[in-house]
Image 1 (cartoon, rainbow, N blue to C red):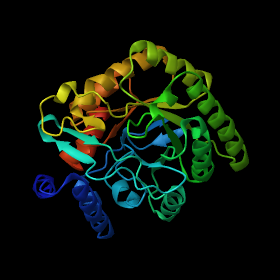
Image 2 (spheres, rainbow, N blue to C red; image 1 turned 180 degrees about the vertical axis):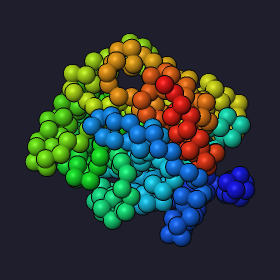
Image 3 (cartoon, rainbow, N blue to C red; image 1 turned 45 degrees about the horizontal axis):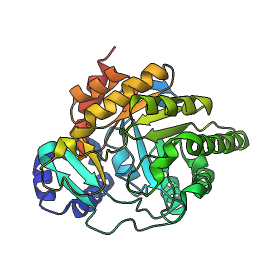
Image 4 (cartoon, one colour; image 1 turned 120 degrees about the vertical axis):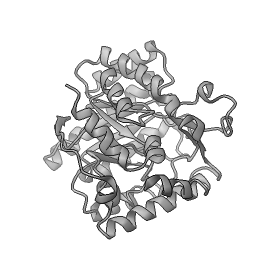
Length: 338
């Protein structure tokens, strides 16, 4: 069924198809058909970060930036759904076209630029949602905020989403906001994370509930850089790490149509780079929960992420290419891993 829908959607430009598909899922959800489209939900509960996940397969941030489609996506059998990236103020993102498919490589290039309706809109949509599963909210900074003042934007988002998130992800690894990846290293990272942890502890105390903090990192780091990031995550009592975001490398797609477009590359070409980072994180952070992302397009590749060291996985590009059936396929495959 999805193969027919995909053949029609892929006749549209990528961003238009994205919007049409989400509206179609919303309609299916209102008609009570979303769960039927996805198939039987896999019950494989796991407890991490003090949260109970119904299964180990989540939706990565970026697909539903504003939580406008949370109910429909939540009905597809995901163990958790991450929405965002959201910024304090609304912003339109980069000029179009800014989303490109590379079907020969099972890949997508995007330079969306944190286009979103702002944190107040997202919070209102999460509050209005009927989805009862685990919701992560991914936060970032506005384009016009200087990197040296980025902490202000992250703290503003943290304050507003804390009461409505099961966990919060700090996105410091998108390649589409100039200077953002500089926050992954050294004093920038330590200053940001220490401020967020301090504010998070205060908010946890005021609310009487602990909201875990996760950090999403890039695949374009060598082992030494991963080690430095690991030290900072541990020192600031971060609850989980998401590995990884998109890559700026084009080595795996050289010569393909759209390969020279600027932006982050996701999908199959990121599979092994992300696994390499996961393995190094697991070696250095044996107890920290890791959420593995990048190139998962089958149950087999989901298992490989788990074997590399990930506790949970997230889908994005594979979900675009394979459709809702991939959720159950991956969840069942992971349920069989001992």
